[in-house]
Structures are given as structure tokens and as C-alpha cells.
Image (cartoon, helix red, strand yellow):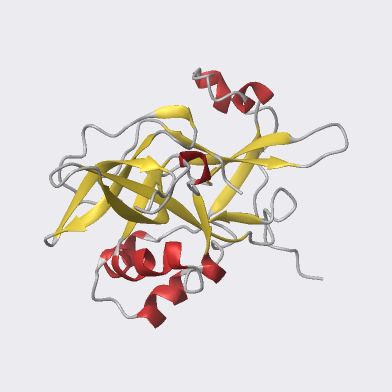
Length: 228
């Protein structure tokens, strides 16, 4: 399950050309949960970006460390923490990649998952609002995860759901039918994502050097099987 994001030099003009206020996105080569993250929401018919706390904090949550940073797509409708937010408050978190850890006999190896063409990815998420006073509030978010596709299943069993740019309007609209939303909660196309090993330097969230994302080997990506 994804526990870190790579957000650097986002180029969203082609992915979300209608976005307002796109110049102040939070960037980090190693963004960890329990930190602010930039998300895109639909507000009064306009795409806007907002800074949300990464870790869903409904009003009844008593321990901040229990705030989930990911939600399984299969259980969204069965868990009260996620159900209402999924139906009414969805967003996307734009990233240039995200980290996963492959289990190995000698320890876990971190990989950076990116689009194969290194374009930004729009990760599906939900959000909620917690009022601290009548006029002050904090908005928080959790990524939605789906099973990994067969290309990346050797690295991890789950990945964040990727919302295609052409599906963004449907994903963000409060009027979209549940069946349409659920049809978007599927593994990424095989050719969309690739992953390459990176230094274990990324294991420490305090490390914020660009070296966190330097490739340590070739990209694992889908190749079309040869005809027999």
C-alpha cells in the first residue's frame, strides 16, 4: 500500500486545463502521510486545488495516528468512515509518482511508480471536513487503492487508483451515479505505469533530497508478449 508520494514540477496544463490557482502546489520528493498534500476538487463547478491533511479525520476520530491515509475500493460502501465521503466528496491528488516497497529476503526494496511517459498522474481520493469551531475547519483526505495490475503485482498487491483525465469530470461531480464511479475503481492499464528501484534513502520521511527518486536500475514496464 502506498505510503509516500513524489510530487515535483507538476505540469498539469494538459491534464487539467480548466484548473484555477495551479501555481502553489505542495511539492516534495518524499511526501509522507500526516502531512499536507495538494488535491483538486470541484467547487461550484470550478476545478480548484486545496491543501488537505493526508489522513482521513472524521469528526469522531479520537486518535490522529489512526487516521487512514488509504481506503480499499472494495470496502468503501461497507465502512461508515468512507461511504458517505465516497458518495459526496471525491477529489484527485496530482503526483509525479508514488513509492511502493517490494518484500525481499534481504529486506524491502523501494520502487518509484510513475507514468511510463513521466506525465503527472491523478490519484483518486476522498475527503472529509472536521470543524474545530463554528468558523474554522480542517479538510483531510485518503487515497483509494485497487489491486495492482499484473505488470506491477510482483512489487505490491495494491496501488492507488489512477483517474484518467477524460474521466475527471465524472469523478469529481457530485451528480455522478454510483455505478459510474465504481466502474472507475479498476487497476491501471498495463501500459500506463512503470516502476524502477530507488535508494533506501527514501525509507526515512525526513529525507527530502531529490536523490530519493534517482533510479537504481531499469524501469519495470509492460511489454507486449511476442506472438508464438
